Length: 242
Image 1: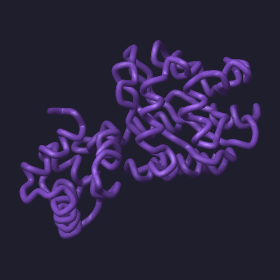
Image 2: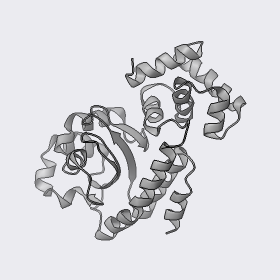
Image 3: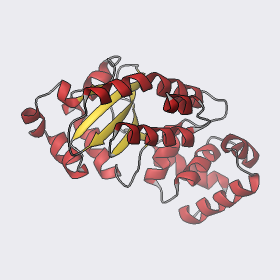
Image 4: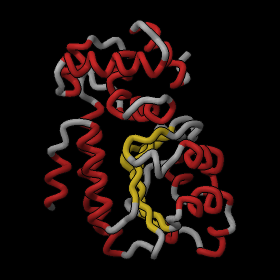
């Protein structure tokens, strides 16, 4: 209940990611991931999760082999049915024969998964939170905890994403993965590419315009550009928008 209250107080995408980490600790997972998939997971975007754990290479495996995932394939087709373990849908022997298990879960070092859908539809798109660990499968108590907290996560994410001027979390997360910039610089760049001024970005992120200007300078240096237009073009190219 304490965590539910913290989730309800989430102010932005960074707070949301912090509460996902807290959920991970509460349930006893080794890592947690929130992903958004569109167009049948051509390019799954990380909203929350450590990119050093969930690397671009591993996420590419998911994009290529999502049809082998017994829960993800269901969630992309229709609304999910609560918190679920992979083991609720597939026998361990069959699961371990699949490419997705051997190319994603085995290198990850965490072979057990518990997940819940946060956003459903339209068909071919979904957002879910996934918890992973290696030592043992998740217990019925773990499933019940995620089931109880999932509505609070859904509400917090929807509230943050719907705020005027607030860039949807997946775009900033994708920029952080695809460009040589930090997560904070990606948040600034995503808003810059959307046409926000430094003052507007500062208001969105609750930081000073001076701090925004410093982040913009760092982005220019790392991307080898000198203007906002060029930085925006680099961001859009990284996102596949041009």
